[in-house]
Length: 100
Image (cartoon, rainbow, N blue to C red):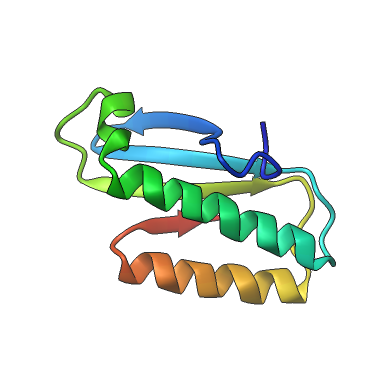
């Protein structure tokens, strides 16, 4: 799995009242395709949340916090950091936590 498979949720875990959706990427930074794949992956994760499907997979009805987490093999470059900061703001406004 990974960011290249934009239509899949990579990993789902539950910790207390948090459901954590984790995506991974081993791609190098510095190309627009990587940013596009991250955006598409985030759209898949948001659809997973908004459809309610997340609750079927987390097997828990008292989830209070949803976390979307990206793990990168390579540290983001300046453009990547700016893009991820924008993603964090958008997800925060939607009521979700975003970490990378």
